[in-house]
Amino acid sequence: MVSRRRLLQGGLALSAMASLRSVAASKGSERFLVVYWNDGGWDPAMVFDPHFESDALDRGDCSEASVGGLTFADASDRPSVRSFLETWGSQTAFVNGIAVGSISHAKCTQMMLTGSRSLAAADLPTMIAAQTGSSLALPHLVLSGPRYPGDLGAFMVPLSPTMTQTMTGEIPYPSRYSSTGESLTRGYLAATASALSAEHPDPYLDDYTDAIERMSALESAAADLDIDSDADEDTLLEKGISALSMGLSRSLIIQGSLPAYSSWDSHIDNERQQTSCYEHNFEQLLALMEKLATASAPSGGSLLDRTTLLVLSEMGRTPVLNNQIGKDHWPYTSAMLVGAGVRGGKTFGVTNEALVGQRIDLSTGEASESGEPLTAASFAAGALRSFGIETAKNETGITPFTAPFST
Image (tube, rainbow, N blue to C red; front, side):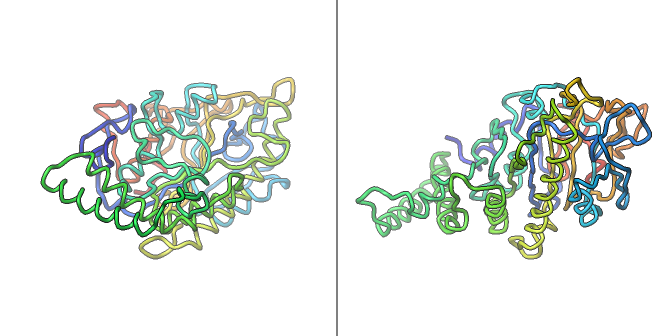
């Protein structure tokens, strides 16, 4: 087993997508990432990318509305969308026309989260945690949803009742267990391993001392992180935000819950299902933003001021309805970015009336005949750069999409 510090020092690949290096460390200092994942493939035309200039695209029963610099599809039966944008629009950016290169849920999910087709690629929150929070007890905390550890599994920790209840003693230790004996033994072994490592550097010893340090931090926080196996979204978010606030984690991901009888994967009855999902989604996002705003960052101030929220779905829906008044899979999607490091109140990326992504200047997000397609790989590279992690284009051929990021 390779220790966390040895993994980084040894230069193992962070991702098959890119060769990564840290730049301007102050950019990534105590910055946090929250990924809010919407599984199934949303319909961007119903909120983010409505193309009101065209009659060829089906966007349901809605009207054109603007909040600040954001234009969106407004509807009376999804009021939480408007409420969210009225409250947080100045810190929110829309990104349209992201090419995911597939209509397979699995492939599109992988592309949106890793920017790569390689199974060795780690996802964005894991890469960011590995580079900016590798010494933390739970660098990337998976509350729910998809995960791609790639070569960086040492930095990804799924939150589970087994982990927390073992720490709190709810799952009992063996009958002969002694907390005093455990403490004495652990202290002795840690001191011995540290002394040996100083004289004879060894990754096993590094790994052992790292594990003891993380164990102590987890034991102190276990009661605050404890969950039941059927914990709901609100509970999971509370625990995840606690982990960020206590300085245990740098990033987390959660898969948004779905309302009854509705799914983002709306091959049938698109308008009803998408409307229901968007309303529920933005209700939950309003609650999430309030939790971030009222939580403290480890070094003081609001956690919201130091957190970037990525609201993502793996694909879009076709521009027109099928014969079951639903919409099928589409290889272009939108994203919503909120919070720290985001150029809010703006829309970036361009699609035509068929919701096909157009060439853009990746530094401005505006249409440009001499520009490049906005791909999931470019999106991922831009997000990494905003956390002080740069992709080397001469090795990857990927231009980072920097337009929506202020750092």
